[in-house]
Image: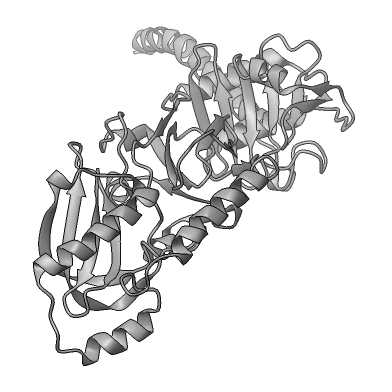
Length: 433
């Protein structure tokens, strides 16, 4: 019997020699994991407000760009965000508000390299942490007006930071920074009053702007603004992009896109006609489209020229024949409601011709050979009677009219509405793709 016990002991002993080291290795791994996590995470109190004292506030998101020009977004309610932020809290030790100043060109060069950027939704004074060779420009605070200044020359253990964000990025979907500008072929005379609430009013009504995030929304605004561009916009466009639609009386529209904001400038174009230019910016979702700046560069240079255009345009409106064009809608409506007369289509045609002549100053001339007419019920509007800068206005009651249309081979055109009773032009509209 004792021989059997010795034999069992000799069999069990090798298992101990295998199992015990494995358990020790597991314990070491778990301990290391806990220590690593503690290295990434600070306490809730430390993560509450900022990274360096009260200097660098918690960003709304952290964006990382690697050497492959791939972008990764870490939002502030994610574990990865907390890991990166906690690590940065330990490696950024200095902060100097009066560091060296950098130009916008230097910032643009940095954006071509490997970096982390702190982005804020409301104040585009982002911070860039350079992960490539940084020439004592490790942390840079961007200026709202362009350029920036160095607030920290060196960060501790840059390689560890880079390795960490590289590792965390593998769990994220990579994206790219892309944008394309398009100008619609159609200049629109005005925006209908009922649509103005859909836009942000820029520069006191000289421009209107809206962010579009779905194909359904785009189709709606395409119809409102008669958008005609070369880019084929589909539902796939909105998988990785948003669209910023801008409608401006100043036809020179330029957008400068960076990770943390979009800056628009507006200017004049020599011999440009009156009307709203429609600008379409297709921009990838990695860009902060909640932070858009609009700057009108034409205030001084266009002051005299715009005053001349305004006066000439208003003079044309003031000289409209009020026996033909409805200027006082309330007076017209009283006459219309009490009238039993009716004009013929032939009589209306003579009146409509005067409308087409006035439409030239608003949306251009169209060949009368393309003319057609339908009988419709429409809302009276100030298409012909609005002065320079006036908002589009429509009235509430529908009027029986002869609607005369002329158009070009692209399907763009203009309508003139002549009421059937009094034979007056009660409005019109431009249309197109």
